[in-house]
Amino acid sequence: MADTGSPDHGTTAALRILRDAARRGAVAQRFVPDAERRLLQSIVDATVRLFDAEASSIALFERDPDRLHFAVAAGPQGQGVIGHAVPPTKGIVGYVFSTGEAMALSDVASDPRFDRAAAEKTGYVPRSIAAVPLVDGEEPVGVLQVLDKRDAPAFTLRDMELLGVFASQAAAAIAATRIQRELPALMRASIAALGDGDLDDAAIERLADDASADLDRTGEEPFWRLVAQVSRLRSLGAGELRLVTDILDVVAAHRPPARRR
Amino acid sequence: MSEPDDLPAWTEPFRQLGRDRIMRPALLEGVSRAWALDGATGAGVQVAIIDSGVEGTHPRVAGRLMESHAVALTDDGAEVVPDPDGGDMFGHGTACAGIIVGLAPDVEIISIRVLGADLKGKGRAFVAALDWAIARRIGIVNLSLSSKSEQLYPVFHEIADEAYFSNVVLVSAANNVPGASYPSLFSSVISVAAHEEPEPRRLYYNPSPPVEFGAWGVDVPVAWLNGSETLATGNSFAAPHVAGIVALLRSKHPGMTPFEVKAVLTAIADNPRPRDGAPAS
Image (cartoon, rainbow over all chains, first blue to last red; front, side, top):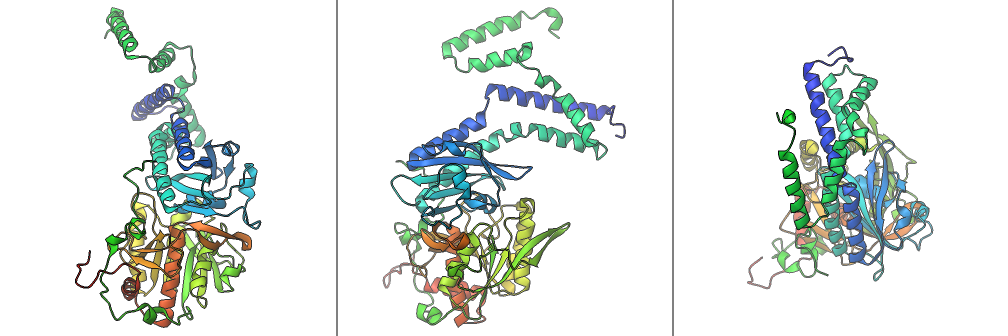
């Protein structure tokens, strides 16, 4: 397709599919807002409890520039790290991410020559640290770390293996929501592929905006109001849900005849 | 606390409780630890450390860092270039060097830094470093990283064979993350997981692969950045213990091939031995 202004028939169909995909993604987002963050939070909460640790956190890899961004944390000393990012070329978290090898260090605070810069930025310098990679398929996507068990100066092999199990849970949570998270990038990539190299960045951007245009309007539209209401129904009890279902059945049966086809 | 049943079991056979499972008769009875290692210093043996670089001035490295290289990514690949002042990006490569020199004080360490550069080229950099070390016939290569890329499987397979036939022993830390990783799981590679007994020369052989050897990897005193020290835990601190033992072995018995090295490691391993007449498990 040479004329990027008016896409051909096949492209129009493909764009329609992309638009549907974007819509479904947006609906899923409304149903379970923040699903990934909440799952990851529950994993660091559990990690802190299980290890009786001062802190636990998960850093996720982000690009441009490459960095490991601390998305969730738990524990008395955990909060300071949230929102911080470290380059994957630095520190224990960076090493574990880069190699995919789990590792623990202890007695780190006692040696003043040790690289403490990253820890100091978060306001807490641990005595010991254990870090395991989160691997989604072939690729590391982040790191789970635990700082300072209260009842022991170091981490055992058993600890490392348990942490590995927690990390695979976190990786599964990330994988499950990845499609949703990557939808905008996915859409741009698909449009670029459709264009077969003929589209410049501006054209790709315009088509992507067009495909997701519906999704930017918030709240008031009937469709999104319905999505929001259905999402709220999730907290209802069985009896109330039955009632709502019965009401919806009645409403559906009374659609105006003109719309029935 | 209840424990899940699906814990990864790489280190299981190397623990006190699981050790009955690796009971082995002494099949190569003439091969003793004294014959294999006594008096060896690692002299004349080179060990390549493909990792984060090595801090040559660290006391634990004891002046044994002979060469420092780094991988530079090019448009269509990667090449190994001299990097004399590169140092260590993380501390880990220096930790490995210190462990190896601690076991084999006269060994020659050659560092090839693959970490700390562009992550997108990590796989390519790793391949280039291995190719280079094998082409140089560096006798032992210590690896703390592996790749899970299916795309690179055939590449690493070829490299592992190339190393084997070039008499280069690849020693690789087992990766604890579920799923295959290369080249650590190839049969010609010596894969290592951690045991927790503080004995640098204590070695266990696991006859049920993938991970074949256990070496000390818990609370190991190691070198770290800027001349510092720390205590480290992980399979990647167990692998350099085996690399150090292999360096001793090859300094005393030059020309030993990778499969002979493996056989001798098995023979001198500290596995429990069955009593006379008892069947091997």
